[in-house]
Every structure is written in structure tokens, then in C-alpha cells.
Length: 404
Image: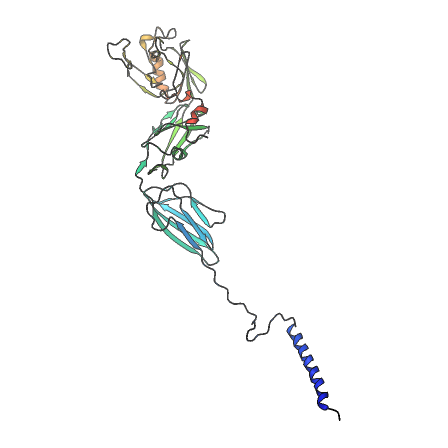
């Protein structure tokens, strides 16, 4: 008799296979979702972590004291960009620059000594805006560097085309490069020029060629905060403007005993003169480019290194005298030598002129006008008065701390 139990097992097994196939089709049905349930994915993402607000950092740090003026203020931001940085002291704002990514700001130039600075920074990013305020104080220098004197610096003065700019400091400068780099000369008609250090506290500027006439030249010393030596900083900026007038150039020939004065290239005066008699070096007028330095009316002239009764001693009171060197040379009135003027050299080294013409020259000269003398055997030393034009410019600029 057939075993009916054996016949029933086959359909049940077939049903199991069909069911498994249906389940397989269902699992790969293209719905893009996984079954939910314990251990399954519900199909939704977990909440994202909120972005952090920008973090701002300021250096020098909050409350810092005795900060060196030659240090920079640095502001940085992470997780965002800097929108605004303001650094102030005494109502003045310190300039600075952002980097390309706007995540860093660095101040330009030195800080003011003995000052309290406030810093305000703002940044923005995905996490929202941020603001940070801070303050710090710079140190008081043990030694303060100041400008003791600037020449020329007389209000309303007009100067000549040869005029140098002379700056005297109150301290011996240790770091001449740093100090010289803080000095600026800007002209309406620019020409090349250079500074030359005469000693540790005196520096002089002259152009390569005479200044172009009829213009203004601005000198600025950005000394504030400049480290000029050990424990020494500049504490104040300085500025002055000099007005350059016409090109007054006087040519003196001691051989022909003539002086010709030109204004902007045009002859405006011809003067018969008498120069140094050249019986000694002391009585020899110096050759070269002189600058008019100062004037006096009258001026008492006494033979240098001699006293009354010594051979060669003299004491003369002269009118309308214009100084052109530190070795005692003037262009001045000499009524006693009128007979020799235009014919012979009889002076102690000065340029003698007729009283009326000496007065004219006296009334028309400016400090820094050119007096060029030729015809003698004695050269004007470059450091004799304002004989700076005696040095070729290539040699002059070797005296700059920034040369090379």
C-alpha cells in the first residue's frame, strides 16, 4: 500500500523553495531601503554636530605689559575668517594687513612706546560670528631717541637748489640702519638722493644733482617705536617742508677776478672781485662748490690762531657778509680793496666785492645757494662748512647705513 506520508513531503519541500525565492526577490526589490527592526537601519541620518564659532587669538596677550615697540600685533582666527581688526592707542589707529585667507592680521610699523593699546577683532564662520577685545601696554624706553635739530626748518624760508637736509639726534644712534630706514624725503620733482652719517648722532641728505628749482620737499622722520640701540627707542615722529626757490648759481673765477650770478640760468649780476692773495694756505681761497650758509651785517673777522701783535694778525669789521665755508670764507663788502677788485687778489681768503654789489648779493641770497669758485690751488674740503657737493655722489652715498 502506498506510503501517503512520503508523497506529502515533496510538495512541502517545493513550497519551501518557492517561499525562499519570494523572500529573495523581496530583499532585492530596488526600493533602496533596508528592513527596519532590531539592528536594522531605519533610513534616516543622525543629527549633524553643530559647527564651532570662530576662535580668535590676539598677540600680545590680554594684559601684557612692557611690550617692546618693535613687536608686531598679530590676530588669528580658526574655524572662520577675520572680518575686522582695530588696534588703537591715544585715538590713533595702527595699520595692518590681512593674509590672503583672511585668517591672519599683522600690524605694520612699530608701536608707540609707553602707550596702552586696545585691540578689537571680529570674525565670522559656519558656527556664527565671534568678537574678542584685548589690551596691552608697551614699555617705557630707558633711553629716548628724539630729533634735536633739523636744518632747514625756519618757517617761511626759501632755500637754494644745493640745500642739504641735516638731522641731529639727541642720542648716539646704535642701529643706524633702523633709524635711517625711518627717514623719508619726498619731492614734488623727485630726484635720486642719499643719506650720509657724519657721526653717530648726525646724518645729512643731499640729492645726486642739485634740486630742481621751484618746488617743495617734505622730510619725515617716522621715529616713533624704532629701536635705535640697546634699551633705546624713538618716541616721536617729526616732519618739515622746505621750499626750494630759484636756481641761484654764482661762478667765481679768481684768475679773471670776476663773479657772475645767474638766476635760473639767466645772468642777473656781474661783479668785479678780489680773492685770497695766496701768500699762504690760510690766505688762499678754496676751489670748489660752496653753499651759502648764513649772513651777518656787520661781521667781525679775526685772524684764526693769532693774537694782537702776532705777524699776520687782523681784526676787520665787514658789512654785508655771506658765509660760504667754516674756514672763514665770506662774500662781503670791501671798500678798502675796490681798487684791486677786477685786477688782483689781495684778501685773506674771502671774496671781496664793491659795497653796493655786496649789499645786493646779501639781500638776494638764500641758504643753500651755489657759489662755485675756480682758479686756486686749494680745494674746499667736503666737510668744510656745507662743502658736501665736493664729494661725487657715488662716494657720498657710501656713507649711508643702507648702502649696498
